[in-house]
Image 1 (cartoon, rainbow, N blue to C red):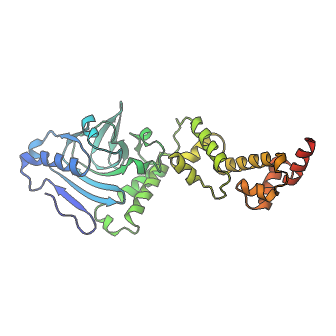
Image 2 (image 1 turned 135 degrees about the horizontal axis):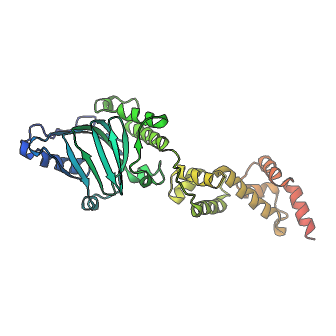
Image 3 (image 1 turned 120 degrees about the horizontal axis):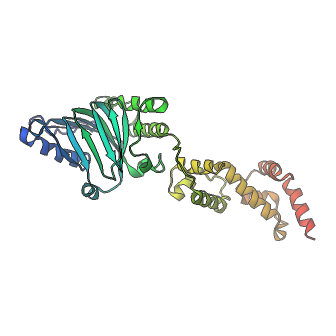
Length: 321
């Protein structure tokens, strides 16, 4: 039965105390209302039992599920009524299951985790009783860590390197442990998202997005006068994650800082070559290009073009007369 949440925000629902013939209907109503809109059936409708413990972790929700054998479907009709895009990071703790989505499928065993795109239809076959942690991740929040989380649906996390670290962190969560976390719950969610990103790693099938890198470079040229311009500010302008921004530059064999400096120096060279600006102090030109430290500007300009800024200006303008 539904219990009132405790002071820590934990909620508990169970089919215990529900008439056997009504347990499945109660479970479907509970799951759809409190977790995710799903269609569920079971081979043991008259002996079905299940329980759900739910704990808020910042913007995410940890759902601890224990259920008899069941067949779960996320249908287009259910999705249409669900609102925002959502992902589920599911760790199986007991039993085994088969997950199918987007024409692919994956077998999940106890101790393994898998990422599910809840904005697309999927089926989950659980032929035996299972226990699992289902971490519900809002799509807009997750994209801060993963630029295209949809591409990683059905990604299974087994063992080795960051996969092991992610699974260990998920396994350490339980309703009681969430009452005594050393960090704020929102910070714990951020740590889990970081581990998820590390476990997925660089996608070997990633194709460079040349339109994105061109757009990012255009932004650097437009904003190079901002001496405090940061990668985060540019990423937010383009509505992409910081991770995606850095990968975009890496795919062009470049970095954010290197590309920004190149834009600034190229602009400075243009200004130093302009006759109508010949009386403008070099320090002012440097400042207009986002480099308020004249000595730093002079070093970088000399390294790029082989001449100090003033010598470059004299030589360039002198050749024009």
